[in-house]
Amino acid sequence: MTNLISQEGLKKLHDEYDLLWKVERPKVVQGVSDAAAEGDRSENAEYIYGKKRLREIDRKLKHLGSRIKLLRVATAPAEPKSVSFGCWVSYEDDRGEERCYQLVGPDEIDVGLGRISIDSPVGQALLHKKLDDEVIVSRPNGELTIYITGISSKKPASPE
Image (cartoon, rainbow, N blue to C red; front, side, top):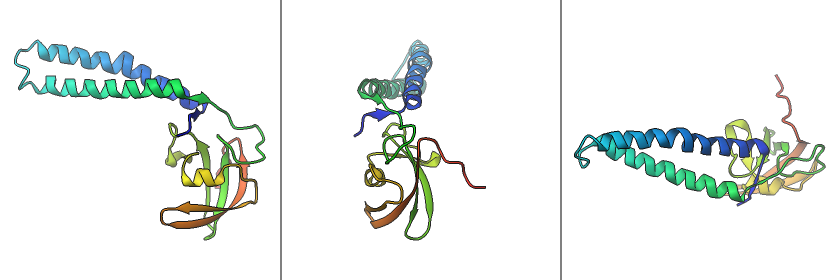
């Protein structure tokens, strides 16, 4: 798994960690404490749910904390000559369908926003390729041939 992340992606992870640690966890701890004060814990749904939620938060905090320690901030080159981390890549497949994705680390994947993992089959196939290159992507449902039509450090404007 790639340990690269953008500066914005790292900030989001830190913000999520801070929200869980400073806001969510204290709120849940107080709720568990209040529920425990009510007496019999074995049939107290608020207490049982609160303890479960607390375990989930602690598990997420542990994951985020260990992940943040491993990550290295990387940026796309200002004028990329080939596909690399952070680049936006436009391509057309052999059916004429056009797509545009940014190659990011696994902590920033959001296909709805056009961000795919550099570790994915498409990301791996595109890595280090140049403009106008023909690329064969090996996928579980068969190979796909694509043609790189653009490489940029910034998201291309959408045609309207």
